[in-house]
Image (cartoon, rainbow, N blue to C red; front, side, top):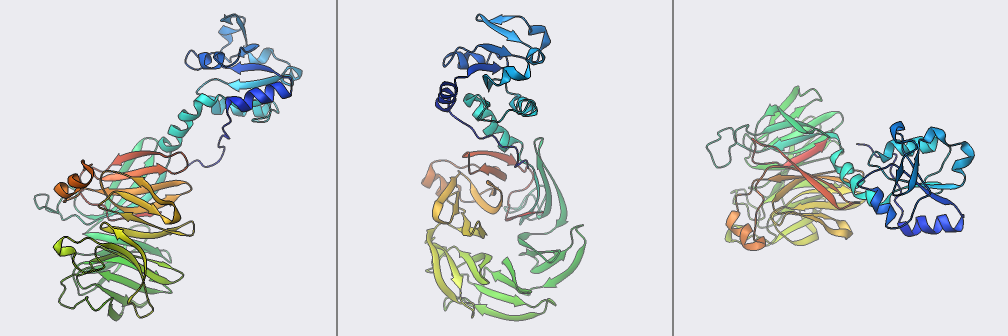
Length: 407
């Protein structure tokens, strides 16, 4: 992703004041039929500069057009240049080569800001992993054409390309000491693999429906959704203990809280759950994000009133998570920073840009009753928080995204 060479956009008021205070003449760069009329509504420029030599000597609305090569160095000292072409990045560099300073000697036409905002999202590029918990039988309710697994994804201006690297019904994934650790909740195993997707170890977790994973001080913590327990492995992948997070949790596997994903704050585990009261199977989805004590019991309530939350993370010193059923991306004191019409799960962030996964929901009637509509496609949102612009990249062939991980 290109993070440098960003434009500091200014208003027409700033440009007008600068021209007046410094007694400069306005000139524009670029005879654009789309953008030049916008300038003429504000000011009548003295000159139009255009690199197209065939226009040299022509006029537009009585304004002379000149080639930049015809201008002397001393001419620039009396001008304030407004770049009036969608190729403004190239012209910026050329003006800087003349020794001119942005927003002192020249500015980009304020009306072109929207092009830049769109470009920032359209040109965003990164590599990341996606985990999918789909079954391999495409005819089953939880199956898909491509099936579950670990998918390697490359996103650039040409779109999203993805490829399955490891098969399985994978849920959360974490990276630790040059290795990836992923949970297969169907086959009850922890898979450890390297950056070349070579499987280094596979460990039987014994219990079905394991979901979240976090690694603290070489201890591996795994959340089991059925038992509402935290299973602990040491650095040699030997099981050390299992702790039930509340008196409602049970070895019977009746899933009262339905805990799912894990993260940590200052080495203290945090976990998302469908129900704090324990009645989610009865339609009471009082979702919570809670912290766990050193004994791995529910300690503090961090967020309440959530709707099937997943993916707790910490970005920029504040907790973020997906309020999955409601389609919300929540970040600390900012609250919900993005609201969409699908079931969201899996979060990453690069600079001011968020990547948010979306799965095909099985709760159509309930979701329609809440928001009036449902977006079914599986894929990822790219959301630039600074500009409030986002795009969606589809991942056809799979139904569920559980976790994202930048690589």
